Amino acid sequence: MTVPTHLPYGGIPTFARAPIVEPSGEWRADVAVLGVPFDLALGFRPGARFAPRALREASLRSVPPFTGLDGVTRLSGVTFADVGDVVLPSLEPELARQRISVAAENVRERCRVSVFLGGDHSVTYPLLRAFAGVPELHVVQLDAHLDFTDVRNDTRYSNSSPFRRACEELPNLVHITTIGLRGLRFDPEAVAAARARGHTLISMTDVTADLNSVLKGLPRGRNVYLSVDADGFCPSVIPGTSSPEPDGLTYAQGMAILAATARQNTIVGMDVVELAPNLDPTGRSDLLMARLIMETLCEVFND
Image (cartoon, rainbow, N blue to C red; front, side, top):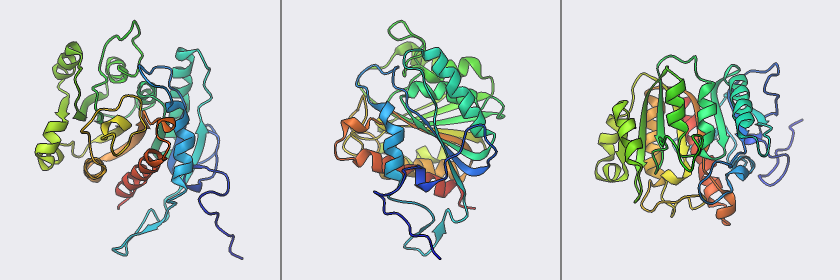
């Protein structure tokens, strides 16, 4: 007897209908999804704590496998696991970072590709600590902002600083490529520090002028961690984010970058951050970010 499949609005909303597992349990999967509902490090509008739940619900619209217009079926046989959310203390950020790192390491040890649902961008720092054993790790970051500030408002752990802290702690993190940079305000010290480390800074002007050149400059043959900030996209595309910047990436541009990166590298992990569902009553932002995760995984597993 065939078990009926729920419509998107029915059933328990795990990510892509994946089975729920415990982070340190006896399980293995090709893809494991972990929620990190933390947004205490934001400098503007809160709401990213609600994103993991919203992304799970949005993922139910498109559950793999997928057969496209070309007749090719994608993600067939790829196994998923939903590891739930990190249990976070409400007002203990250092304890929160510790728990995030431990949970992420448990996930990484049990799957081929870890997918993390943030949360503000500060969570990328403790997530990256779980990849300390990955040789010559590269990060490809889609973002309007550099997030390489040393100190903001007397804290070293805001959503403006995750990559600065990660580079200080992780000798295996050898390079960061940031794409989509734009806006009126940049920290000159942070820009200088990133360039001094040899990081690649690509403005939205560069993307608009010659996307093909940007794609050619992406890492090749590397271990890559993808970090996708919702504000990397134009707010006309994804309005649900804390600090939107006009004239950002289109969905097609963002997916072209992620697809090219996935095709020519080994993707070890991916996070999506700074999505604030409460700031987009249409739900469009949630649906597009969930779709972006799925399309990226289609490229990762396009063997």
